[in-house]
Each structure stands twice: as structure tokens, then as C-alpha cells.
Length: 292
Image 1 (cartoon, rainbow, N blue to C red):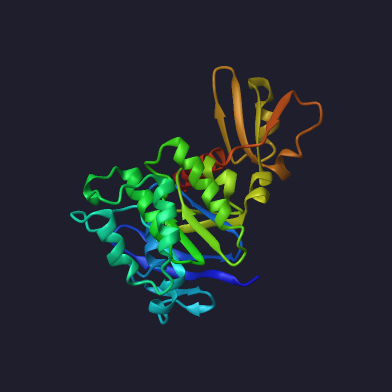
Image 2: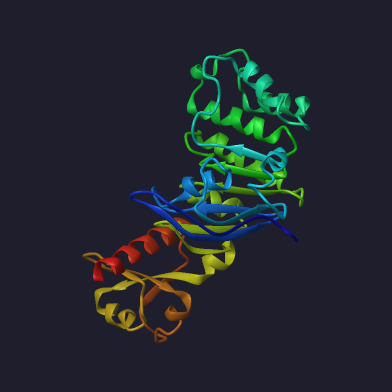
């Protein structure tokens, strides 16, 4: 299937931070989660994708077209949920909707009213009186009401209660049943991604560490636990990081290296969560940088 989003060697330099040759792609019919610690470049990358920030070098394509040369046309096919307020605070939800809907050729009033009712967003209240979670629900309703093919979301589950977070994930899974659509969203709540993301793209210090299928990623690594007397056995098999405690140790390893551990060793091997993978990769990278 064709790529609905292509980010190719994108760079953006600031005084104290830069995106460095950011490259990844997303095909129609899939959900991609975008992860990384705070300050790693997630929001900056999304701003560059949406042309809210001009890139220094590289190329961004959507639907096979250069986004910056076809921006007005392509934005009709994109639903964007931003992590900051983008509405007219003094106006009601209804008045905001009237203004925003006028920009979309395929605005679907019936769909909007359905989402607003499902999400419990009051139409007659000014946006400034809404909670962060309710504003996010309103933004999501807008994004889903003009038949967008590519949904881009920056921290959409931030500030939402657990019940609606689960409902949101169900909505995303429902959207993606249409194989012409795709979803790209950043989040620091990695448990959400484990439930819905087909692909994970990990950015750290402005560089993409990997962009791969979620299941393949989860199979790439293993956590090895054991007593202190077993630590040297693991050290010889190139762990990415070892964390010690008074009772023993916990080692984060590539699965291919963990398979080299001698049979019969009194060790416990566990499949890591996505959160653990992100934590250990960040810590091992920091550890490596301190050495050099």
C-alpha cells in the first residue's frame, strides 16, 4: 500500500536543539505511535509536518505529494489534534465549530453532532470554561468530522480520564477499519500504544532511533533477572544496561544476545513493556554518552 506520510531527512536547527535527518514513513491502513522522552523532538517534528514550523532541509510528502507545495489542498484530508489551545477561547464551542467547519469542503455536520454527543462536549459553553480533557474531545470531534484520511495527534490522551482514554483508543481502532486512512500520534502513555499501534517510531535527542512494527520491536528485547552470583554470566553477553539491587540485578538485552546465555543458568527472562524498552534505551544511551 502507498505511503500516506513520508518524512525524509528532515532537519531543523534551534539555538539549543535540532532535529537531525528525521526519516520515517507511514502506510495507509495503519496506526503509528511516536514516542520519546520530553524534549526529544516529538512536538517539533509534528509542527514541521504540519508546516507550523519551516524545516531547514529535507522533504515531507503526504498522499504522494510534496506537502509544502500542496498545503491548502492536502490539509482538507488531514485531521489534526494539537496538544495546545487552538480555539477562540471567548467563543462557545458552537461558534468555534461554525468558523472552523467553513474551511472544510467535506464537513459532515451529522458526524460532528454524533461525536459531540458521544464525547459529552457542551455546545453552548465558551471554550475557556472547558477542562483540558473536554477541549481535547472537542478537537478530536473537529478532526473526525471532515472525512480526513490522515489523523495526526500530538499527545491526544494527555489530561483525559482513564475511561475516555480507553474510549478514544476504541475510536482510533474503529477509524482504522477503513484501510484508506492512517493515524499518527505522539504520546508519553506507552500502554496506550501497546493496545493500538501497528508501528512505533522512537525519537531521542532529535534523532530517530528506530521506526518498526510494534510486535517485532517487543520481540527484539528481553529483561533478564537473577541473583548477584549470576551477574557475570550476563555481563559476558553484552547487556545494553544492568540495574543492580540488594537482592540481585535486572539486565536489558537484545534477544539475540540473551539467547547466548548458557542453558541451566538460574535466570528469569521476561518480555519488556514498551515503557521499559523506552526507559532502558534512553538510560543506556545516556550511559554511553557519559563514557565518551
